[in-house]
Length: 259
Length: 244
Image 1: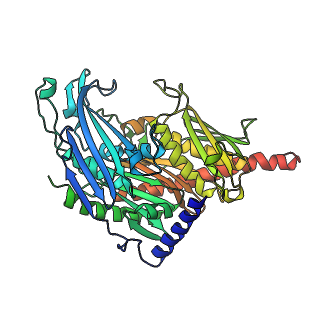
Image 2: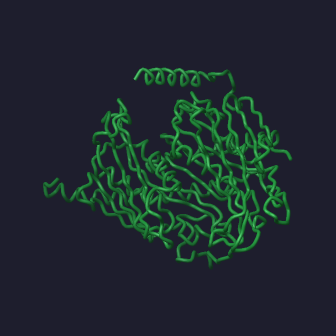
Image 3: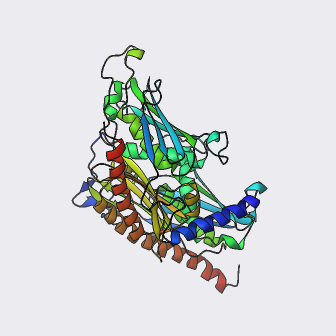
């Protein structure tokens, strides 16, 4: 109960601050916190990246293994995306099977990569109907100070930039690199009292009633959208948020996703 | 997936004869379940959805209670026989995500503050599915909530738009969804044009997105009128007879 009172007070404080044009850490509404992307953080993984956005830390590791294709797509490789909100990352995360938040997170990241056809799945085919490369994108949330989706999506695409296909390990021949065709970037924007803010920290996330995640590609097309939270948005608001998402996405792409 | 070419548009018409801005046939029935506090059957083309609402009732387990308002739960469930290949019973990752966004689509219209410490449980069963199931589920649930007498600011209406052969179209059928290039389900409070759910996958330009929003907006307004008519039809009649 005591915590709820504190939470309400904090929500009011964050809300009032935003209402007067300020943010809790002094940033502008459209400024990200400091971002670092450390590519190839894990040698054992076929692709990996450690992304930090402020105090949020997300490690993405990609493993590639031969496996059976789906019966309806015998000549296509497989992508599987999973997210784990590790209990060490927040007192609110509990051990156990994935909850709706981690499932939603993984599915948004997955949708961005799939929708933009980032990986050429035909090139991940080893023997049609028998063997294809299975690409497992595992998102490990290490520390949660908000905006997990952007960090996870950035980590996923950064991991895929240096993806190695472990052909030798499985006694196979063929290409052992697969360059991604696109660089989808997710930018989440919250709406607080008619203001739009990117990169919400945890307190800001809790004060917002809706958040829109915009996933865009280098050519400005969209390959994913998701609203979350218990609020409603007007069409003009969504359009404004999409424009912000595309612009900020381009900035992140130029900074962190060059080969 | 998309590695097969199928002609989805012929002479400006879609496979099932619809224009780009036409909904599939819709049928709504209110109060189809005896034990639920409110219920609704919603048919959209070949989609058959039933929503049952219980509550406000005591929230279990108690530590999930909210001291200030009711907690809304939503469970979207596809029957094993509702699809071509039998679906394994029970929640999967897809249905967990759909349940979350559907709950968030309805939550903004429910006046939860009236019923602290209670639960309002919404159960949506898809008996047959043919693309657009989450939108059919939300439409059914919205009417069922109203039928349960839950105080609401308005009804929520939902429809999907998508892209086939580069054309933005309303309410994708299963074939269009499988071979299409984008899919964007939307839920809105039609009267105030407030969007409470939006998802998108595939690929859209900004212009296509805007066209999609226009079509979705029109579709939701049509669905809203049907939902409203179904409720009026059900309850104006019983009011005349002096029944409950």
